[in-house]
Picture 1 (cartoon, rainbow, N blue to C red):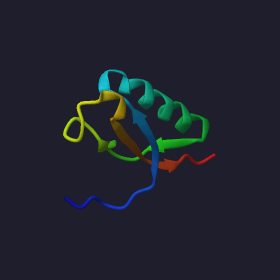
Picture 2: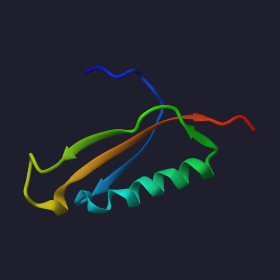
Picture 3: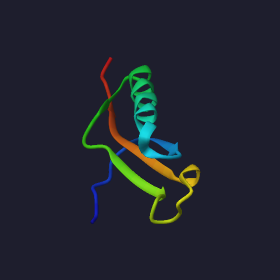
Length: 72
């Protein structure tokens, strides 16, 4: 699938998905501090996951939120 080009705020979550909400929260706080707003659905890219290894500590999930700057 080809997705449209967008500006993304990106963070990489390390480890299992049980606490991925913590990484989402960190990205959300960064967006607020930098006067950015969400401009579409979140994108998750599984850089290393259960298909690649059973070692949960090796999993890497890239979280990308499409964003735009809020006018002052």
